[in-house]
Length: 616
Image (cartoon, rainbow, N blue to C red):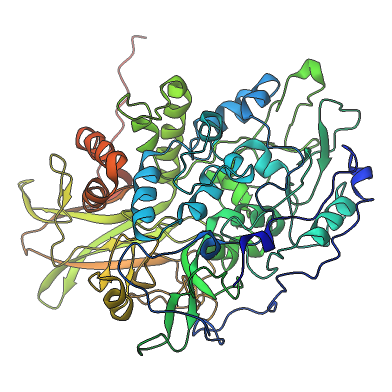
């Protein structure tokens, strides 16, 4: 039996507080527990090695342990210096840095009510699964060993408020060697001392390497800076899109370590992802070996954005040339200004001679959670951060408005009048991307006659009940994960799509629109390949055709995005304990309002400009 203690130490004894002293550390003499399985990409049929010790689960919750959710990288109780409280960073760092982070979903990761409701369900499905969840949502507590017990009860208020704190990213070490920067030798020693090796061919699941001491890294050289260690590194820099984005991939690829690919599940059935033997660490963490829950980084990695970038000035901010490549180019919009207090030596960043100011906005598409985080009914509410949360919600709406372009036409197909809507993905990943449960985009099409009367509609949303009518013609872009018939029988669930995040072992639908640079071969991987849709090489758009009444003279197409569907919220309010009930009550009052991503009509509106008369 493998034990968690086998993987606890990251093997660096403290010798001094400065990087130079750390290089003298004696490396751990024991053999590495984990070796790299290989650097190649997983094959299209998920994996080649069966799980020899998979087992047939019993009724829920699965009797799993912390070992079942172990992931390599820096482990709890191994940091010499605990992660800094982010409020200390506010002393010197400006609004585009601290305030933007504080209002972001990263800054609020530990308070997110949807997370806590889903967390409760996961704990009821698989014992100690909270160990897996808290390493991303409360890393300050996780690295300090306060994820035990795995229900989060040992977390401090500071752990929760810190969310994904500043020094997680700014102490992170690139698992891939080769950089020539101010931390090259230091990082070499840190990587060599690990007793649980992070795979080089797959970033994700918070398989993070942290500097055990408070040596902070960033994009700029700061000669003479003495307030804390400040090292210029490629990983936190602006010049290498692959390295910089790999940092984001540390959390924005997510695998379930409980479920490994096996060719022979117990009791028979086709090859599939299946629970490992109880109380046992997964046999491999390489790409494709564990069930893929999210693949935002890999979507980007196989896009044109990762291979030189795309001209997209709507995302580039002040970045010269308007080409965006890395995750940060869009989600940490390039601005000009100061990252800190000028009197303390902060340099003005002009995007030309001194680099760009990377605003820590981290905007995605979530404009709803920042709003309900201000609801005093929520036990972890962030009412004091209201101004910053409102700014994040506004930034999310702005990001959504740039995420897609729409085209619509009206014509004849034989004797039938048809409307065709094209949705063009303008992002560097699938549209939509990320956490799959309850997240969706859909098209609403309205047809009008010559008198301006509505005579046809697809994709009707009831704003009072929060229900979407899924008519025969509707197009909903989403990923639906679920359980196979074999696993469903073993755990007492119904086979098919479910919201049981910790148990889902297959994908039933994924028609989300791929990014520029899509190829069938590159996306023929677990978690990437389309299911229930077909996209040709180079296709980053999707067309939907509607048969409309013959009297149609005008059509209006609207693309909506919703963070959490009514079906998902009903699931969480039923099974998510007290937090799920509170989330449901808040949803009842603010039903994750669908946001307009784009709208287009045919024929285009005839807008005439008539200047106002002026007196001579």
